[in-house]
Image (cartoon, rainbow, N blue to C red; front, side):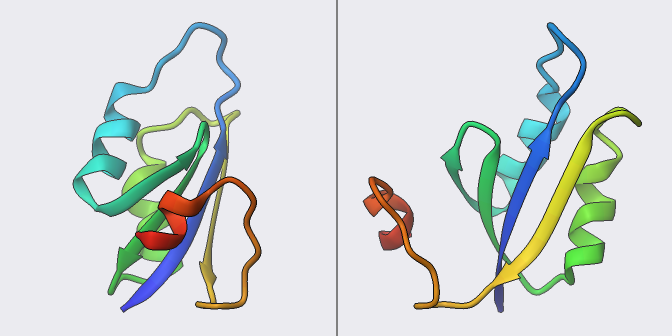
Length: 83
């Protein structure tokens, strides 16, 4: 099972994207920062992007990348490290 970092820029002022947040919350996920999540999944990065990408607008940005355990540095994110 891989761990992915998902980040996004939602470029529509006033939009709250409830379906995007629900989709991310239903995954084995940790909401690390305002627009950054960690997701543990057997899916590929492309499959995750396709699954949640349908909930964002065309002018928004979405980035999904696998991360390597013990190869990341954090400050003030102890809850994410424990997750």
